[in-house]
Length: 469
Image 1 (cartoon, rainbow, N blue to C red):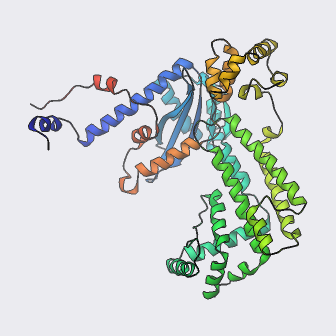
Image 2 (cartoon, helix red, strand yellow):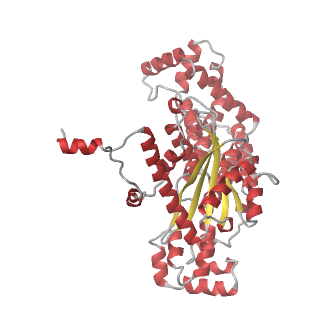
Image 3 (cartoon, helix red, strand yellow):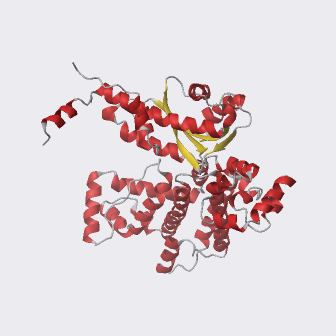
């Protein structure tokens, strides 16, 4: 219970809808102002953007910015804005350009823009990048690495594609019908199965198919019995050993693709580190191919265990199928990531300037190469490099090696994916629901996904209490 004085003080706090809305707007404006102030200090930034449609059918564009402060690289949402008309490259550019003009941000400071490969963004004549390059021809465009990996992973041969589609039909036959789902659960309970549910398949979550197919493989005996009871023609699939082998392989390869995808998600990822992960995966593919060419499936644990348990002596058929798929997958990844296979080593010194002979392939001028040799010979800096991030290191040596630091930061600043935008659209779906579909989500979303602390003292200093008379 509050005393009279406290109750009176609480009653003086304005909590009307309009007042709360203005407070949210004030906080969001302060966060954006802090970001803009930092960009103006460093005069170097990179953008990440994406466009999607919210629950009310409005097109929303989200823009993230990455910039450097005194000690490290920072990334933060710059703005979220709904598009009033068509989502063309010109309209997207007008929204961003207007924000830049109002904030005093120059396009000359922009190093790169990361987005997906939509025509509205990448069109040669009328895409967003075409409009941006009219302002700054040097801006680099990056196609989201995670998106490219997902696109490359979808290609497979006819046998595997048919097996995947049939597996999806089996899952949906059981899971999409409530009665079938309940009966299948009872059957699993009676058989003492570890799992009692299949995972429902959706096309949107392509790479989650590894878990879905793994669950189907683990419950294949229960599924087979259930399909026999239902007199379903799908039961013959589980009886086909070649089909189950292909199912096991699909579960394994999608697991590996999903692990790769997850490793590339997250905050503060850059193009160099993501390209390294893709390069490693392509090399793994080549290793797997060599194993399969010797009729060994030991790198695919689900398939390997099934082959041992079923005492399959001749793996020629499944190995031919796997070899064809892995070859196609490797070729697709190489076509989407051509620079990775060119073995360009000119930026290795950025990730580790202390590697032996790193200067031989640095691509730097003679003067900068001498500076790099001097830096690489400094034992104190080498010890410091082991205890900080790469970006923190290059910012710390900026005073003594300014040009090297600026070149390094121009390579570390660009986004490698649109992960932050995807996460923000997920947050938007929680804020703007079908029950609150008239909400203007821009300021709420900005506060929800930003990690910048609002300057409440500055905000309060501009306010005047409205005491009732």
